[in-house]
Image (cartoon, rainbow, N blue to C red):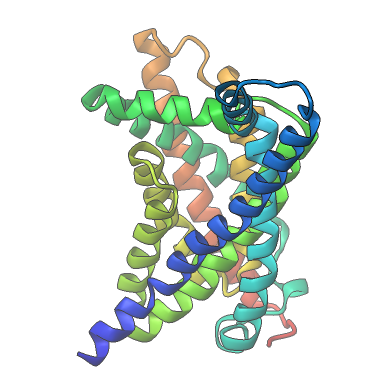
Length: 288
């Protein structure tokens, strides 16, 4: 019963993120509603048209990204403080300035590109089995503005989101999970919760799959800044690379080529990461 209680406690960070998202979204929506009403004062605009204007505003990419950015910044400070007070001493085996070397950074680059390919094939396979899930995912991506490059979106996707999400899941969630389960089980649990956090089937499945690798990077690397950097690399390639990574993928030769490239880059990334950790830990360093 005690272990079950500890496992259930691992859900707390996820629940708090959902609550925090609503605490951020509701007042922002309220402020924009008042702004729309103020803008249309004295126009005798029908109530239905006011509602339509509000709904159109709330569904625009800039609005969605702004809300996401506000939530992520709030989560960064809250979970950053939580992680520092509760888990940093036990989980940070190396100092931030000692966490990286060229091998580790290069391996994270390779791994982020390789997993882009592997996860894209995974998504396409799921999309074939469940086209309704893929359609919902595509609509969500379009409404969230992820496909629209803007300075705010880039800042959110490449900096703020990687830091805040790693603090929530590889920081606080994984910290509690390791108190209830063996390390392998803890990594699996936080990966599942990371998938649930994304609240749609396609993104949830690939996020859970990705969370397994990120959990491994955290445990092997000994610092939460390592998964933060990987997460930033992964989002960078996913945001900026575009269709160029999948040149003529509809042709059988290129379909197999990019799949092979993805698997080999993923394997090479893991191999070089392990080598980088060995090189780093063999050298004298400042340990926390």
